Picture 1 (cartoon, helix red, strand yellow):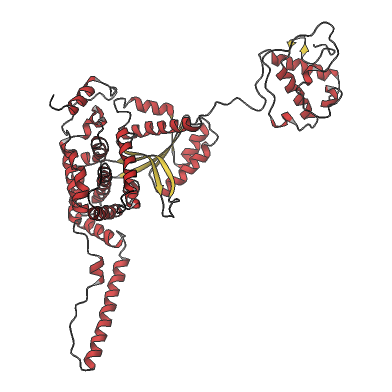
Picture 2: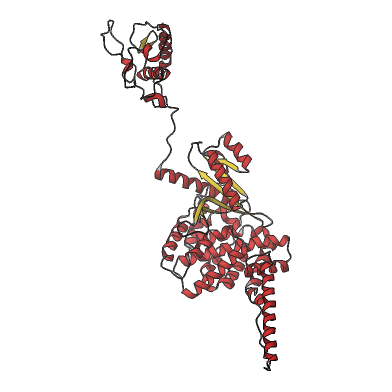
Length: 530
């Protein structure tokens, strides 16, 4: 038991660190109702070593344990400050503090030490890298992927972007049914905002009417998994992401819109060039880039037709703007046609044509209300015209026959290119095994090969470049030319000259993409005559 006459900081167990003494003193002050300093949990830093031992006859002076005590009117003794009953309680607590100090200095009393979180550019780079990894895996598993997609709404300029999607994945199954997924990526390791992010993600999924939503984090707590299940969400941690990546090691790290350098440079250059092209509406380009990926087919078709009208009136677009815009238009057309091809399981070709024509003319594929209103308007015009003729005849004037066009016929006259579009739809439905992959083929051809990249030559993409893929792309480009004109379709026609005879019988999917075969293939593409 410690000698009660020893100064604070010494007992029979050995020296007590300054941090332990300060912590003990602060706890005593709180017990007496003190509110300064350590009352909010912010204790002074722990000392780097033990307090030096005193001499046999210590000189009188201030208590060393009071060096970091709270300022103010200090009581005469520790017992008086803490309101303790007597020396026995003081010696007991002093001994306990000495035992705690034998393992070294204590941490701050404000809480456990936290790992430093990346800030500024480091945090942004970590987040972008995680988004790239997730998008790469989703593409490897068959999805058309875009990173950092803005969600645009109808609002005033500068406030039309509601939020953005870290990773947008569009999957097509064997019956050409389209499903869309949100993958929200958070690179931070803390769990404080995990429930808030899950609730936000559930609301965004409901707003967009997407089929799947996934929260990707460094680690997911049990609380987070339970909440995600109750909200109908999925969760993915980095460890499991790494397992999925190992199965697709042969895939290039970056390509096309998966942070491909050539694609990123071309998109950035296009933004700059569009500022000087006043005849190309910025909203139209933004729609084809972003909104068409989650819109109905008839809205996409109208946007493509509008692009053809403005592009034909403004002359030839500069490069790479013409290739980028044409590539987005081709991908949007294929996505719209794929969605309509899935409807052929329920509708006949004639019913699908009627539905498409109604949607393009009235804006609604299923409602006939506007057509009924136009028909009644025609009846009203005919009735009033008959009364005018009757009045003239009663006054002795000769009746003059005038043909009045029908409002219903004028408004509901479908575009001339609808049959060509439905031909594309039927060809996609006739070959679903290839049609479900043609979106990825168009992505690689338009936003990697056409823009000067080489990642499309990787072995991992051989299954996307066959004669059947080329045939469907050719049909789509011809359809794009009919809808939007040659000025829109011609920039993407060179993709038909790529190598579409690349099928491998038994590929090694776990091999990295840095093989000698890959290097030879790139060299052959660069120097075809060698």
